[in-house]
Length: 392
Image (tube, rainbow, N blue to C red):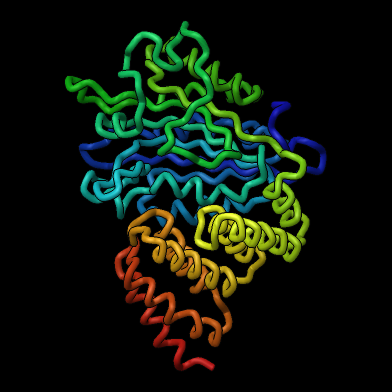
């Protein structure tokens, strides 16, 4: 087991592994993502995770982004180390030009509604403990996405990052694929196919990872990454743009680390109080609607969710959404949509009809301004509110 992976100590929490392989089913498919799952499934869970024991969740060509979100959210709240193996194809939505992981039903015109927004990874992983999360990626991109990600070197150019035989590439990640500062990321983005190529590509990097792990030993992440690149190149696969970034480890005194430890030990009230203190300090220093203050408000909303207080979580997310809209952020901005979607999700989990009735009208008002990606979200709120009127 790798010495750099937390959780292998005796008595440590088991690791969690999420295997996600997704690609469009139609003519736009660039990679046969699901073909890698038999290779990874043959690896013992403990080796996939780098821990003594592990739980594995497999998603093969999922149809709905909300289904992926549900599994990711459950994995992100697991107490032990989390490793995500993600294979698939990146596409841009036409409205905001943000990268999405294409799912089985995704087409270029339906990306916004049928694909998984990449920033959802960042949103769900942000409360993970530092040093406890690793993303291993084998992604494919079309020409438009490749250029929008800001990858400087054209595919195949000498000295491109990760080219076999070149100097080691520095840790890097296109800003649009930010997955959180505490998340370690390794892998590659395969370059756009040539115009003459009509065959569907293979996830050569991830297959190399699986083949290496089937030996029963998992080297440290950086070494596994390097060996996979070499193995894939030896089999004729050009690596493309190499993704390599270490996550930050636990930092004594880091408020996020302290909060995470409080949650893991069941001290939810202490965690919430500490986040509230940081929110107040940020509001005094930068303003109550500043990104610094809203960040801590979002942390409090997540902490309330983890503590099982759906009403408080919903209330905070509603306040965050309203603050963002009042500062001029667009109704379809990812941060605004995320806040309203999370408020909606938590509202549906409120067990007290009185509290649900109190928060429902505010949610309905925001939903009328921020319809989100799911059709019928506003109608859902109105139907639920109508049913609540008949409950005590």
